[in-house]
Image: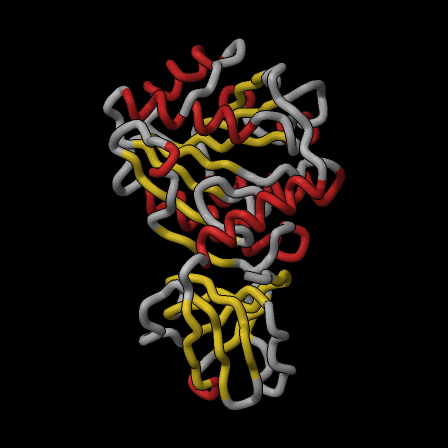
Length: 281
């Protein structure tokens, strides 16, 4: 990963090398937060320290898939092709607005798991930081994860309503990189589409019997008499609480569900997480 460090990044690198704990990164969209995370991920791994990444940016994840929280532990500096998850949890939304508590809980669950195998865990978050909703999301996530360090990519004082509620000794403020470029909503949509297109390439249709399934929406079971999902709906294919992969609905009725998926087998799939968004292969 060829990332040019911005001022303050190398000092942060040294602090992370001595951390032995969890660091959560917060910042607005297009602040360069994820670029900073990628840089530090490579630097810590290159120093021979096992480092985990928990990617909780539902809409613009660079490790997992749209609508998901994902994680991976690295024992060497990753190349571009190594940025793929070990574990994935599909929440079904590319915006955190409808899954605030679920997003905080799943991010914390993944961060806790990675502590068992990594000396340092880096947690990337969504760009929703403004207003009461953004503040509530970030504080809920920070309370759930309980990090040793909070890295704030702060252009001015936009993050202070969040940072003011935290112990000052845990907070590090970093200015956004001057190389960051703003991305339009269309560019963000194309990025999500490309991630899904790469994932579903070569997929095949497979059949599930609906009476054997529990359908989940926004973290809660859906009534068994709900309308079947529309063709094109992206779904998570779970065994209990673990997402084994994603699917795209091809056909659905009260008896069966046909999904396009790269999974070689759907044996053991007992829960289907309904997404709020669609994909056309």
